[in-house]
Image 1 (spheres, rainbow, N blue to C red):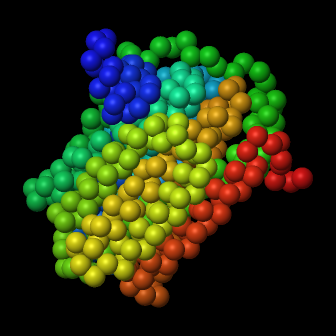
Image 2 (cartoon, one colour):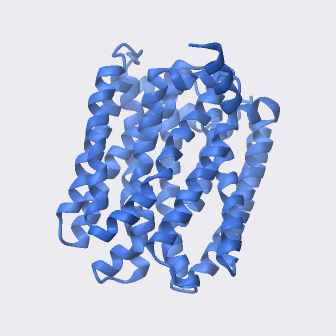
Length: 409
């Protein structure tokens, strides 16, 4: 590797930016990107799908909820399984299930079957996302670990540069066309199996002992509070993803293309913010950053709902996106640092099951609020309440950090 390339990578990502050249890190980025493609391809076309199938507009969020619900149960199981049999098996399985089920959506003819396939696709998502985070802890530590978390988010958000606009464009051809993109995940499985080494250490002790240790780890106040912060951030993010297409239709009478522009802009902004996470965490207290960023995410979401023009909406989107991009790698890094190495897959995946609850709960809560008001009002309410809760959680984590305090003592 040339010194010039190393300098450029450290300029972009901060110290340790060369991790992006590691094949293992590239697998992590690919897994994160594919998992989020399950959201980014569907988000801008969700409302159009309800029109095509002639169902109420408020059901648009079901396309996101169906995808995320399996993760609530399966993410912890996938993480524990990766501790027991190795990361490569679980990630390759996730790619295959994701690709086959997602691509098959374009072959069916009714909305109920679409939702069933989204649930199956969510099984693949449950395997990809938590294991990719645990892998970072396997290979990196300290500054390189913090930078790697940001690089992972860059990989995740890179798909947002093309997927929403590609989905919106393909929708012109047919509603089935965007889902063909998901078949790419099958090739990702093949590449992962070739590249990822099979000798990642696995846990050999009895299952009962492992579960007992995992439970004791998860009820520690610092780890539990970080887990709840995942719920808060993802409730806000997935409320946005599920109903941004309805918001722009209701407020400005815009369609799938404009929704695609908004989701793509979110991806670009979060990519830029995440790339700086390693540099920010090296300079400032991560927990102060976490509190501020969660509050900014909520304020930004509320401002998106309250915006009276498309220009104001895009300005609010900047606040929302920067908040989300800064908090995401910090949360992952805290979980890696707080988790015992031999329990890393199980601990992180259990925390991300809480994240999956947030992914499902955000659109569900928005759906309830829509029966009592407009989508604009729902955005404002969710943003202000959850942003405030996120700030409080950051203070709790700071108090509990480094202590063995349990939730039940």
